[in-house]
Image 1 (tube, one colour):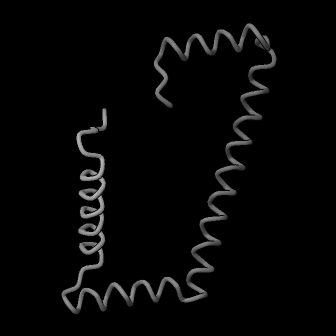
Image 2 (cartoon, rainbow, N blue to C red; image 1 turned 180 degrees about the vertical axis):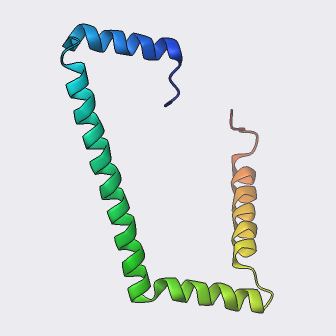
Length: 103
């Protein structure tokens, strides 16, 4: 969870218990849980509102029609985008020369 191991989680819980005491921790956890539920509900509302407005304005239909036309004409917009990205990547690599990224 969040890239935190068991020992780190234990240490965090121990510090929280020392700072706030065992009587305040359940109250804080409930508050945090309610906050996370509100955030989740808000993001779901925003997503549904965006989808609803996209459907009402016809953007979603236009995109689907464009993709359908592209598929009918043997033109694949995703393939075109990938080719353009590959070309841009090659151009950047040519400009940077011997500089290599470290992973």
